[in-house]
Every structure is written in structure tokens, then in C-alpha cells.
Image 1: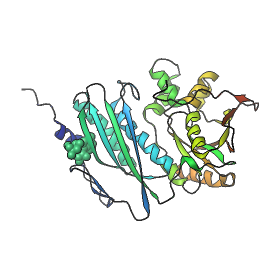
Image 2 (image 1 turned 180 degrees about the vertical axis):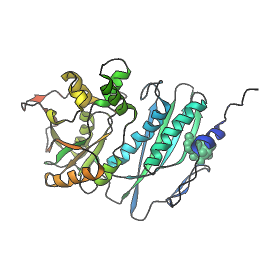
Image 3 (image 1 turned 180 degrees about the horizontal axis):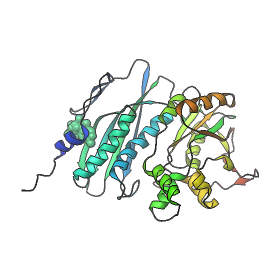
Image 4 (image 1 turned 60 degrees about the horizontal axis):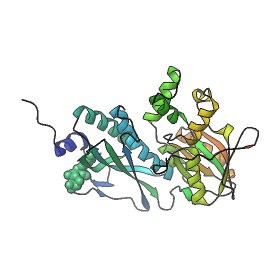
Length: 328
Ligand code: ADP
Ligand code: MG
């Protein structure tokens, strides 16, 4: 006799229900009731963010489900990092065309490993059937001391502009997965790793509290995401292309690919932030404490939009901007 297909409630119990770790007084109640009950500490604010991943738009149907689980939470944790918030808990709304236990085992394993790595308790969610592809919506909640969140609106003229890690490898990885680019074996492995297993810069975000003036995570490309800081802070910026950090593998690609992937490519999940020029040593110390490399790529100007300069100091074209779901 064939086994009964797994129902919604067994599915939640089997793959997404675990005891709250001891010592977590902030999570009075997690999965199992109508609501989770949460409690921030005195003097703390909740930092809350939601992101949706759609099959065919944000991930390919062929992706390893463990990597997908990792990434679904990682991209949300990256938003907490950009605010300088400490992750506390998350909510997972899953819409699935069918119940595939092997897929769920891998997906939940990847998701919960990322959650454990950041002390982020899965406190609830929703499980439904999707008529078409997989839809994953994750909400994360973190805490910051009141008034200390890093915001897009904090950049001031004269501030340095910094970015963590390297940019462009994730977009290269996507082009590789689509068969639209080439790479040697080592380059391909690291570009695809950057695409499919991004590491949110949570430790760096925390270390930058009180150091950075403004911050955002690079999810949609450097130019577009810097544009968000400029708009919210009502300032301009000058960026030196030669300083934009790229991996050695990417630097061996043709110029046009480097420009496209490092400036407009999405999915890097690095932190882009500003800090007063007097604070350079503090930025370096924060990055050292977090174990992340940071690079100074330009400065905030009073006005003038976003100007990109080539090695000779001449302006370059910055016209094509970040990915926008409604403006292809
Ligand atoms: P309700 O009908 O009251 O919304 P549900 O039956 O949807 O309750 O969910 C039951 C419990 O399981 C709730 O605590 C909910 O937060 C949790 N839950 C549902 N789906 C998930 C999931 N994918 N991951 C984590 N918790 C979930
Ligand atoms: Mg529900």
C-alpha cells in the first residue's frame, strides 16, 4: 500500500518545528499556536524585513534545495545586517506545487542551518499549495538599541563610500548557470558559490553601528543601491571604477562583463556604507573585528547625482541602473 501523502500539519511538524533554544526569553512562544509571542529587551527596537523568492525569477527550478533554503534566509539576514541589527527570529511562508519530502528535508536543512548560524529562531510561518512554482516569503526580525539602526538616509557630503567583499561574482555565477558566460573550473565554482550561498554580513553591520553614517546591502547592483542612499540622503556621489573590488577571476574577464556584473549585477549581498573621513581607522577596525575586507570606493558629494570615474579621472556612463521588477 502506498504511503499517505504528507499533510500540511505533519509537514510543519516534521520539517519546521523545533524547541526554542534555552535562554531565549525574547521568544516566549514559537511555532504551534495562532501567533508567536515575542519580547524585545528594554531600550531595543525591532528591525523587521520581508523578502519573497519566486521560482523562475529569483531562482532556477534546478537549484539545490539546501542552497535555496540557505539563500532564502540569507537574503533577509542581509537586510538586518544593513541596519546593524542582531537577528532574533524569522517567519517562513512557503507555497509549494507538491509535497516532495526529499526536497523539504534539504530545503529545511539549509534554512535551519543558516538560522542556527545567526541565532535566528524560526518562530512561525504559513504553508500552502501553489498552483504554479515554488514561492518562498521570509520575514526576519532583529533588534537594535533604540535610535542606533544604520539607515539609507544618513550619508553626508564629504563622507567616504565603502563596500565589503567583492562585487560582480554572483552575476557572473548567474550568467554561468544560464550558459551565457564562461570561466575556468575554479572561477566557476566560486562565482556560483557567491550566487547560491551568499553570506550575509551580519557581523560587519553590528560592528558598523556608531561608525557608519549610512548603509544598504547590495542586492540589486552597486549603482542602483547606491542610488537609494543618494535619494534618501539627498546627496550625490563620486565613485572610482578602478577601486570597485572584484575577484581575481572576474578581473580576468573582458571589461564589458566586469562593468556589467560589478556595477549592475544583483545578488552580491555585500554592505555598501558611508562614514566620515575622520572615521577611517574605526571602519578598518570594525571590518577587522568582523573578519571582512572593506574597500573605500569614493565619496559623497553635496549634489550632482552619481558620477563614475575611470582610471584617467574621466566620467563613465552610469545610465543602466539596478534590476527593477516592473521596468525590465
Ligand atoms: P493558522 O491557520 O492559524 O494561520 P497555520 O495552520 O497556518 O495556522 O499554522 C500553524 C502553526 O504553524 C503556526 O504557529 C504557524 O506560524 C506555523 N507554521 C505554518 N507553516 C510554517 C512554516 N512553513 N514554517 C514555520 N512555521 C510554520
Ligand atoms: Mg496560516
